[in-house]
Length: 198
Image (cartoon, rainbow, N blue to C red; front, side, top):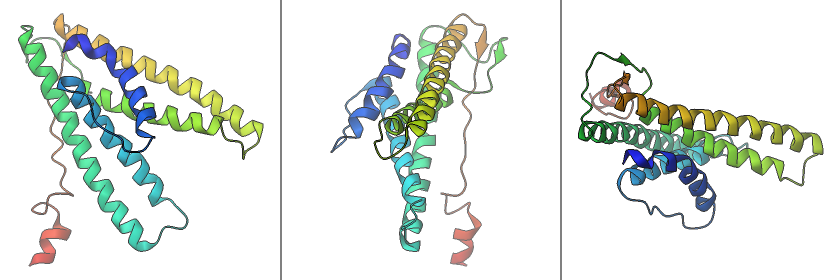
């Protein structure tokens, strides 16, 4: 599984392009299947966020979009944790034991993969701005410059993710599985929900 880390960036880029055609499908299995599933939640979140900002959206539409966003975001966070669990399992199979004496990385690999996913979406949609014909050249040039910056930032983050895993294998760094324990989606923890029942 650890040898699949260099496939994450190209996979996310490919999937964003593929999912913008009708009937998007999930096709990967194993660890890359988790990467794909987590990426798909970000894909859905991105487009729900766009709907929420539409100037023609009704209050009813915005309320439904907000519920969709909450659901997609919860699934996204759950899958980040599953990515981290899978990586911890793979590292343990290589004989890496946590906790150890190495310094703790505050951001987990799953969170970094999530950020790479969001940046893949940002690159795709910024490229759409470059290709627009209903705007002036200055708009397209500005968007093209942003695409270059975003690609560089994403490449750096993908490299950092791979280097973090390599450092963990070598005992130089470690991470802990941090649980989000999001409260707003839990009817037993959100006072606006459980309070309404009393």
